[in-house]
Amino acid sequence: MSGMGFNTSQHMRMGQQMKLAPRVIQSMEILQLALPALQERIDQELESNVALETYDPATDGDEATPREDTGPDLERELDVGSGTSEGDFARLDAMESSYEEAFDNEYSAARVRREEKEYIPLHQKSRMAGERDAKMDAMANTAAPGPSLTQQLSEQWSLSDVDEDTKALGSLILEFIDGDGYLRTDLGTIAERANMNGAAPTVEELETALQKMQRVLDPTGVAARDVRECLLLQLDAIEEEEGDDDELDHVRALIKDYLEDLSHNRMPRVEQLSGLTMDQIREAMKWMQRLSLAPGRQLVDESPQIIVPDAIVEYDEDNDQYVAYMTDGRIPGLRINPAYSDMAKDRNVEKKTRDFIKTNLSNAHWLIDALNQRRQTLQRVLNVVLTAQRDFFDYGPAALKPLPMTQVADQLGVHVATVSRAVAGKYLQTPRGVFPLRKFFTGGMQNESGEDVSWDSVRAALQEVIDGEDKSKPYSDEALVEELKKRGLDIARRTVAKYRAQMDVPSARMRKQY
Image (cartoon, rainbow, N blue to C red; front, side, top):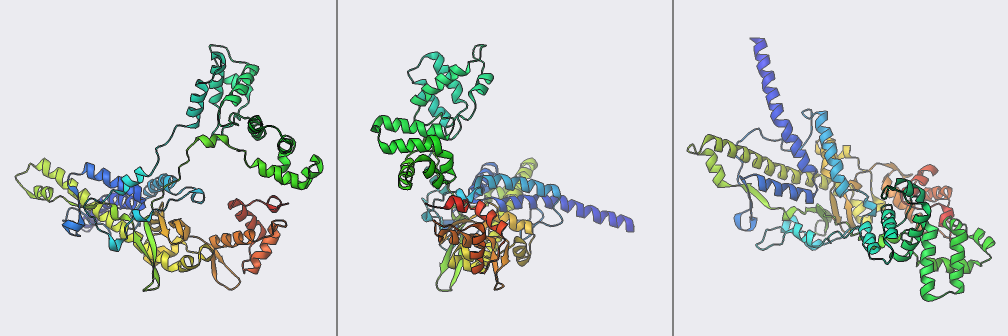
């Protein structure tokens, strides 16, 4: 009997595990979704679930239909514990990568459009009749993608006044033009890969076609094989329009013979070898700024990335604190359709139909719970960030403090994976700009005063030192180490060099101005 009781108990636990695990994983997926993806997910659920409907809190009240007992309840706080397998984590990691690629990649290079009127703070939120849809607004404000560089160049070339054989050769070359407008593939390689009517073109034929393309295609410089050729092609076009003069001669000489020295900022060497004075070199280089190093980019519309913040941080003067308002006010209120809820209880309805409705009711209840838990979890994480990073909001990036995710997880009593998913792909709109939520979670060090300093604040201090240096005598990495020490930051030279590279700051020799 004892063994039978043990087996029954074990079976019951296994059954509950099978029911709970998928829901927990799905809840984590909802938690991880950034706002645009969350809106899409809700739209999909509304299309597929007959028991789910939207409502207007302004006219229908603020509460959704109370939940009925349709299955095991979810944990009140989203978390991942022993019930989650390694396979589940792998699924979540794969999903996280896909969303971060769309919403969290290359933040330092992203350009952010800040449209505060698009979002309504939580305490003012209401779903008024005739309210515009945020997703439609975003679509209306986003330009449709234009034709690719290859398509535009192909159209130009098809209208050019050249014979058909040359046009065919040019079309072949266009397949190898890169995004900057350069032909970086050797003509011999192109000839080997080509098979035109059973006979590959010669390098000489391709060279002739290429020269014609370089004169026809716009902007000038497209189809150049290297930077020097690209700049000289543009200079030729300018001379045809403006005529020759001494300054253009200086520019041409520098491009033809000293481009590598200029790129490495070896100005004294250029002065010595070219016979030009330093003033003439400076003027020529200033003139060269009219030329493009990537002419192909002029034809490609690089629309700024539109980032939709998941929360807005504002300063509350009355209480002297920063508060975060969720920006999900335009996500529709969801509730259970009462007609289908009644049908699920009506014995006169066919059992197969009732079972179908019950499944939809269960899924609808789960989604509403998951959305509520997402909001609660994200709000709790934000509250911790606002408290821990108060100095950042007061004084800027240099005051950012170390804040490991494990510390936040311990403070909230959840698994660190929960914090990681809550942070993934989310952005904050703050009085200091729009930042990825991940920015506020970082490691760090202690300064000479024993205060915790984040690595981001170290980078900010390094940038301030470089910005304030004498450009005629820029600091070497060793000198940067000494300057940071004056600020109480004892950083190794190799660390300074690593951070400088990450910040796209060139070496002292390249920063020197003559």
